[in-house]
Length: 297
Ligand code: RIB
Image (cartoon, rainbow, N blue to C red; front, side, top):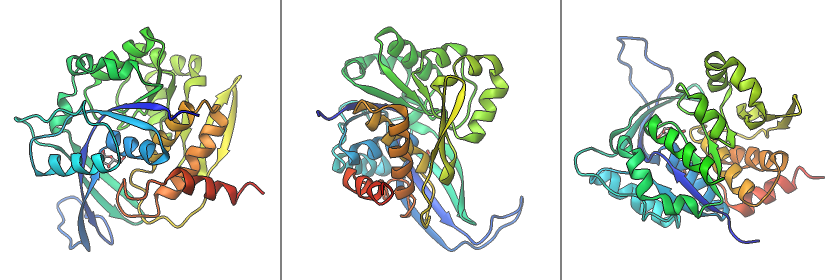
């Protein structure tokens, strides 16, 4: 079968990672263990996940004209991701994420920088790429008006749109009704439920909810359908949700149903946490297939 074409409209960040035995209290300074810079950004991470699995991936995003921007583009290029729709900007720096890894989990603060210039107008300048895609993925590290407009375009042209509502923000009822799938984690789901109690019930068949190592679930005819996760030795869970989304989009692009796509995405996400950094552990198709084969007997 032909490779799915996936467009990722989203963020590109440099992750500034500190590891520490414990988190500081407010006003406290502590001594950490290690510091790394690693490529990240929910959009770029999802693009790398889908590209490693074999999709033809087009990134629609922005970086600053600076050292981080140049390095991130060069790494995305090595992943065979098409970058014709990533225009550097001169008056804002590349987005960064300050990440603290401690006690087996992470805290993240992002400063969007150039990602804030992925505007609705910018989207329209790159609409041809969107229209030739089988699946489009987006997240909420770019302006919400852009997500709104992308959802209008996808709805108008009948395109499959996967919205990963992270980091959580208020979504309009228009966005919810325009998306094909919405992929919150449990925290994001609770926030969405508070904002749109009725809307979410009416649209529950769009939801694919991630629950970390427990797996994921979706709804079919009013019933929760659980898809079990996989237990592995986790080194760094940063980007596991992004891997799930990239793998889900790949699998949907390969015309798999939600059950199969969710199982595949759970497996990819489990494999992704075995390396430090959001993108380093993203698995190849062969790795996911071999991993799943161990569980199929
Ligand atoms: O989902 C993980 C990502 O969130 C990190 O790579 C960081 O850049 C933030 O965008």
